[in-house]
Amino acid sequence: MKITSAAILSLVLPLALAAQQPQGDPANPLTTVFRRNITNAERNIAQAFDSIPESKFSYKPTPAQLTIGFIAQHVAADNYFFCNNFGAMKANLTAEDTATKEDEKAKWPKAKLVSKLKDSFAFCQNALGQLNDAALSENITLTFGNQSQQRPRVSMVLGHAIDLTDHYSQLANYMRLNGLVPPTALPRPQRGGN
Image 1 (cartoon, helix red, strand yellow):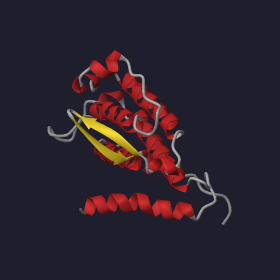
Image 2 (cartoon, one colour):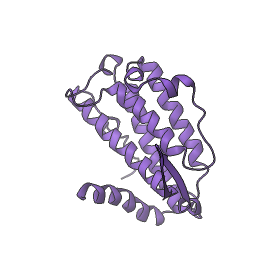
Image 3 (tube, one colour):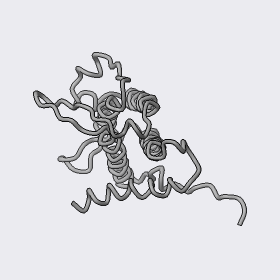
């Protein structure tokens, strides 16, 4: 319960702060904040995977955890799951993407995994372009096996933002365990002035 509350607070607090800022689309402040948070998370994940050597893509801290390569293919699959529910735009995936088992995809070369991941980010950016604040409250139908559920579209957008943040945190920990510095821990350029 505490983790869920913390996750919701981490997304709601920026919403409140962003509402005070003139940036973005003033007619769609919620969508603007989601877009900003998702874009930042995508950038951090892409930079993390770019900086992790290919030799580390089979690394996992314990036998029960995922490899770095598995995380890459998993994030790409999650991106399509969430972003396919942002509007009418749907991903057009190849048979290789849909028929290959997750464990096999996890062993693809780094260049292929990162390329597939970045393709999924590009799709999500286009899917985000369909959103506005009114669309967030629309009901969508999710089907799992033989069961369908109605949920507000915002649950998919929020779920996507949380999922990206969760996997970036996972990657950052894996990087630290391998002596690598996560993108968000790198020194930031100094601002001019006082």
